Image (cartoon, rainbow, N blue to C red; front, side, top):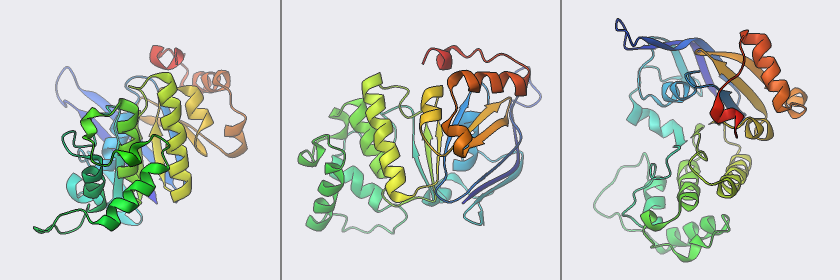
Length: 264
């Protein structure tokens, strides 16, 4: 479903701030894979997601989604293949529009839009049923402005919007990092449910090693723009945080010292 071939990306070339963010990265994901991504600051995690989403073009290499080479495809055209949830709950939704209007925007993604844009009763019924699966009581607040919702509620809405059209690839970019621990757990459980029920091919960046181990069928660890660990199956199920840190040290020759990750 997703293939990255020998991706290189360097920022600020020729300046004192020159940084190689991706250094010959290769990744293949099968349909339905749920891959968690862990790594220290500057490892290339967000740059990886931006390469897939088309935020910028790689210096070299190929990005292939479901057999289609999208390397030179601009971000707005590539969006029909991709759903994305960002770290900031304020992103991904229109704050001044109602919940139903936001869901309608997501449902119409990729379609031609005319003057008759109104939401039908059948669509409202569908949205109520979708929202009821969240167990947040939002099905009774269809016309509430999304900007009035809590961070956790907004992320839940964004998850629904990102998965509504069943994207080829779902990108979760530290989407619980800005939430309190209790809300983060609920959003993670909801993410897992939506991914499983819709059989979505998913890449989830997290700074929390325990979450990286607990969720998904595969875990990759990045360091200096490359994937240095790729663990799946029974090996992943039996992992501990201590195992992961030891594997990182053995593979990279360095000590994992990212405070944000270690304190989670």
